[in-house]
Length: 301
Image (cartoon, rainbow, N blue to C red; front, side, top):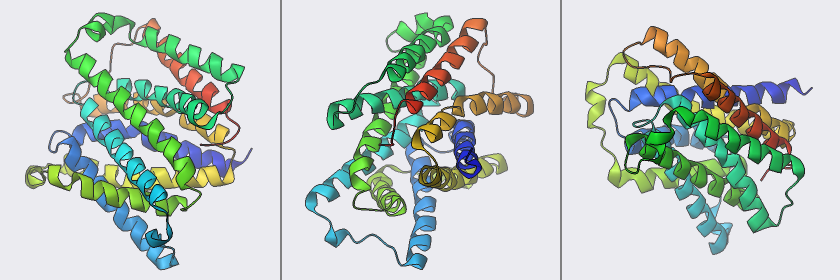
């Protein structure tokens, strides 16, 4: 086994898995747009310093208008992904967000078939069936509320699905863009576009009244943005992308663990969702289905 690739992938899974718990704390003081803007600002600063030191800043003047347009679209899609993910936490639990987000690889797979004429193999089909069957079991205790139009739970699920769709669109765009930019150059471009796009919608007044816990959560979320994506990119560089995807798909497991810990240490802010046998089996099926979908791909998009 490539232990370097495995540990990088596992680090990504842990960081992405625990992220919703810390974002939930940040939401107590700031709105989703402001949180995302701050995450982009810190991440852009760190990546800018790194690329400037390496003299590897992206040269946009050399790129065609088509590539620049795709880069703009990709950046806006990632902005939508970040903002709607945070917004969804106002309506549903971190565990639910992470489980539903596992539909993103399925959407990515379908996009690859439609846009890049990729083939659908039996493992991918079985993985998709397993994932959606798992979602049915996971939501079984809340099916009535899920089907009730306008409910808070329903709004949260819709926001997560929008986030998943936006991420899949970003990943499909990334396949083309990585022919013109390095991964770090692309992330810098996306962060800068996100900073500009969100600027009219932010409200940082809540920073003045934040508690120590909220500041700690915000700092963690900002650093998480850089470290998680950095580990993910490096993992793809040293290990097979399907194996990376399979390890990253275990993210919901770390979300459940983190929420259990938060429920113990912050009982007034967190409460674990009701875990009956159907919910547990459903979550396991979702993670397994996402892993099978990742392993069905020979190369990353």
